[in-house]
Image (cartoon, rainbow, N blue to C red):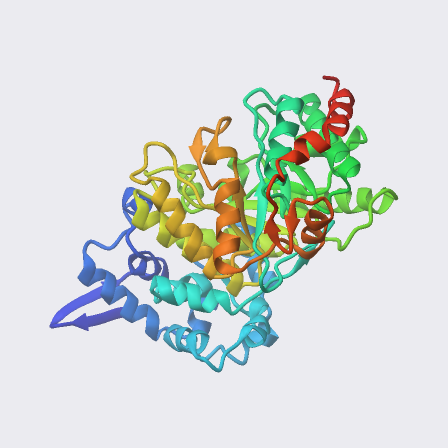
Length: 472
């Protein structure tokens, strides 16, 4: 197949689909690092022109990585809804873009095609969209999921409460958690990144969060974001695991570098589901138990990108996640550093792209709106992307004390940020969590109540009891 076009008498020829996809991508430092980026804007426009004229079947029939050499490719091919795809197979990528942006195309119509959209198709159409287009198309789609509560409905803007502690101290983690709850955060999950991979430490964190949720009767779920094997070792000891976390990437080799396999994810999901069925103390709203994190550049950083651009690989990582019916997906958009996303422009673009990809493929997308301290970004960067993602219907963002994660040493969004966006855009927490906030007096008629910090005093006895439970 020939991938070529002529612009103003200049001929552009691309070797294969991977090169078309890579050079049609918006500028990213990671693609330049990999030697895949367009040499200039004329070449980028030429690649977009070729991409716009490809049919969806031409993309679906030519995986960018051979399924016989990569188990992620094999999974994506095997799970593709070919029957649903038949109706759109003859569309060009440009026609798909126009259909997504058409006023007559709504969320139900897009949802009917979720399983028919391959990651490469999702990435391809994203490359033909401006930032406003990515927001407009994504805002049409709602993806609702259920674990202890329900996330993703129209008008809901959730928050992962992230009370990390540099020494994994359960008392410090609980205190930060109460601080976040006082700002209405924590409906997506109370999720801790542990400082160590110790089974004892991770087990102590999970037990303390479970005690907090049980004592205060909070309709939310807990998670400790250690390696999947550490979490399953905790489960083996009888530690409660609400959500099973794992970072994933878009190639087999990158996942191997993470120490995981598809079989490991399958087994882990089944074991957590089995544990849920045995926990009579919890009323589950649903059986979605997986929490995945992804991010552009992860495969390249592992030397496992197969000359595929980072946006297409991000789509493949999300396609992998889709096979495990997750409760939450989180694109950690700026965490990987300026080697892959150099500045505010690239971070904002990548955040909107990742969110759009997930919504188009039917995933419950959240985003860690963040940057590392050596990136060309600041607090206004996160403010801008936060507002754009909330407008696009993002399921949830992070809530970090004062925006500064003292364990991971990066900047994210704060409890205050989430509260401000909810107020500005008339958004609300998950319904079960919103009712709990009203019942505890943290909100009144949906607004944060004056003096709600008294939650800490009101619950002083309960907090002391929680500290006793954690051995403090």
